Length: 110
Image (cartoon, rainbow, N blue to C red; front, side, top):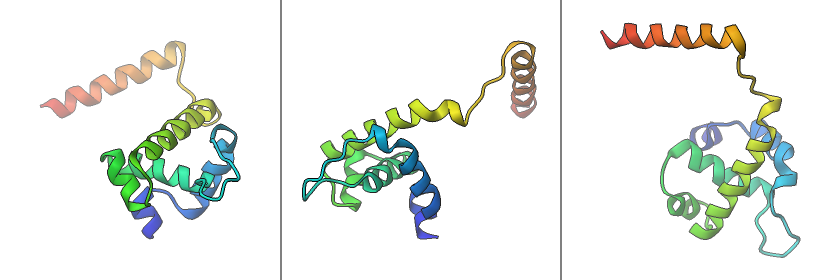
């Protein structure tokens, strides 16, 4: 429950995300290098909290500069694989979805 509260994902989901984007993360075998899991967790905490990078890094003992790199790398990794999970409507279906959203927004405005 703590992982979901802090990162908005379960342990299994964090592991799956890490597995999917591992090739897009910078990881070396140096003794103080951040693991791919840590990089993903820093980025997910940033996405989930909407706070500053330095605050996300402080909670995990990572500098702001490192947090920035991890967030960038994870973002680029997610961008590279999003088409596997997200499909946007095209043609008439797109117009239908747009119209439905407009009706919903118009209804809520009153």
